Image (cartoon, rainbow, N blue to C red; front, side):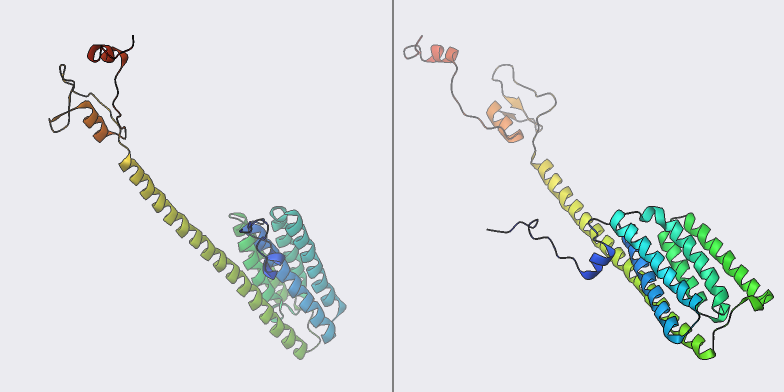
Length: 277
């Protein structure tokens, strides 16, 4: 006795549990969940790093707020499927956070430009056209304003405590940025490969169905049109001008089969002695 597949569902991997099962979560939802998880990881890592480096409380708070906000977005998405309503808010929120971090993390020489690259990547993936183009343009404008501010009013840019603090922070941020972008590329490529495999399977199934249909049509024989029948012997003329008995013609041009008997009138006519009136 074989077990029903419904009684033993496929065990989900850790990634599927964290990001969402593809059977119950759309690709957009899973992408949103993955981005939120990565931001939680980045925010938590930078908060811990800032704490151990003895950086100002404002830096720890910025990282902690980012991680907590990403956690809220993640729960709302994976449990309640609110990702469609949260895509724009999450981009706006982190655009504000990164703008503040630019001013507090030594501007262009700090780690914030790396996180702006992450924001650009996330915006392109999360938002649909033309909204992604709109927010990318807005983000570019914000970055240009920050660069102008740093050039015109350098006193507004708060430096690191020391050069070693800056180097450590930037080095860790480079690694985190690479992890984020690698995860995004991996997810997109993986989904592309799945979609390509599904398309190939669908194409092969279409070819198989077409061959089955053609074979079925080839085996179907239908009588149609005008059949030339002899007025005396009732034979039927075929397309080669040959005459055939009714039974032979219909049997060769359809799936019908004949079994011979006699009707009451013929029985009276041909067997009058045996026919029971």
